[in-house]
Length: 167
Image (cartoon, rainbow, N blue to C red):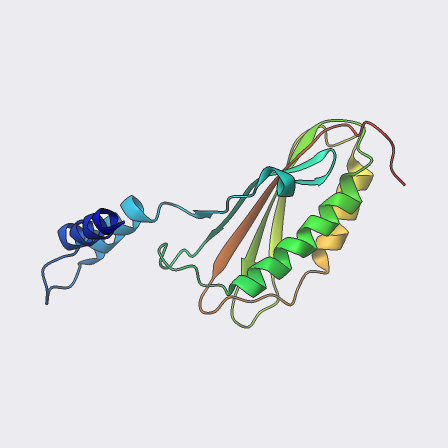
């Protein structure tokens, strides 16, 4: 354990700029790119990936475009929007008859209602009613906000045909 702490401290000392110097915009962007990546990916245990037997949350990410290293959303707020979208996906897609993918990107600000974009891959025609129901449910998700600035939250669902038709 002591070696881990020493190693982490040494690593921070090596990557931190000299005391008293400030990173240029380019250096900050490079640091963010190397250490923070494009977005924060959320690990979901296998028992939480499926919102219904045939509805898998394949990816869950959030991103602050102004500073990729800052999460910019309270965990409680993130959990609330996650639960709302999860319920909507399960309700809308649990009776699917085909395979397709849906990606939803929410934009949260400090003061405006949440907005979203929805993209679909593959079989959209035979699932039109389900997709419209999902979109309608998502339109009700408004009262979510970032701590400051803008934050994007992306949900990527993979839907397969239901093995039994749930009611």
